[in-house]
Length: 133
Image (cartoon, rainbow, N blue to C red):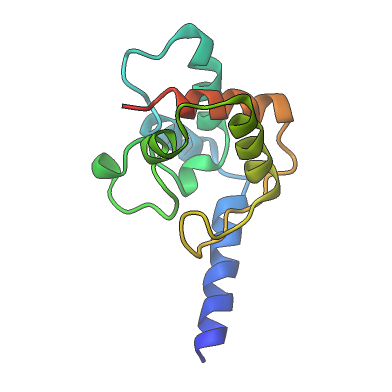
């Protein structure tokens, strides 16, 4: 029974995090939840736009405290954990987003995103890491 529940939970998360056919209305509201402080530098603005246009906000939020429960870690938590970011850290995070995985932030799996362009994912990671407080 427990095994079936875990499989069902993982399948539900995979569907929720991997759905790229969201309606425009849902994407617009998701983009609003990723709106960063007014200090977003022009260099990181593209990363923020890419996050808003993706399905990332299905599982992640800018700051968990302001958004309630989220499946994945808040971007601010990721920035704190991985900053200062060396080039190898950025590369590792880009690969983690594209390939998916589990175990770093708990047992909930990160859905792979192989359809995203590596350069775009790097922009996203650079933006996220710029959020370190």
